[in-house]
Length: 148
Image (cartoon, rainbow, N blue to C red; front, top):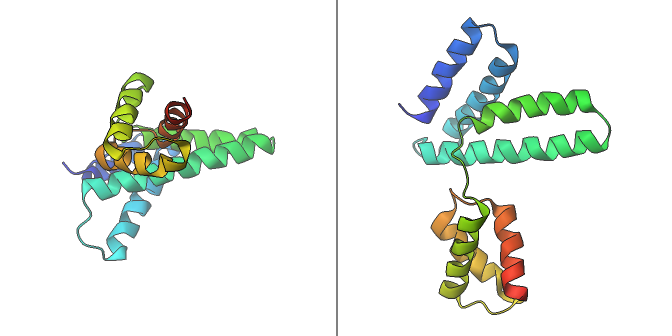
């Protein structure tokens, strides 16, 4: 079953269960997938759906941060509920130890020697492990490795 079909089936279940928070989150995900179809860039694959989910996750995390800093916990709670729904469809990302090993491999492969060449190493890392690595963590680890 494709990710798009899985989201539609989960949406149907949530609607039947009258789970308003989950229904809202799933509708948002489904709308993002429909936008992918309308873009006309070919078939909507699971990989493209995962990219859309990562974008949605990043948007929710940014919104939560903004709402918390503005002391709007009510709105942050809504965003957290949507984020929880999004995360059920995303694969788990690599832990810090695994990411550190990949960072070292990327540095060796790219030949980066200083923080100025971090972009080369990050490019090599993302090319090899884009779906499995947290970009923020990878950037932090790259900075540590290249500054040492």
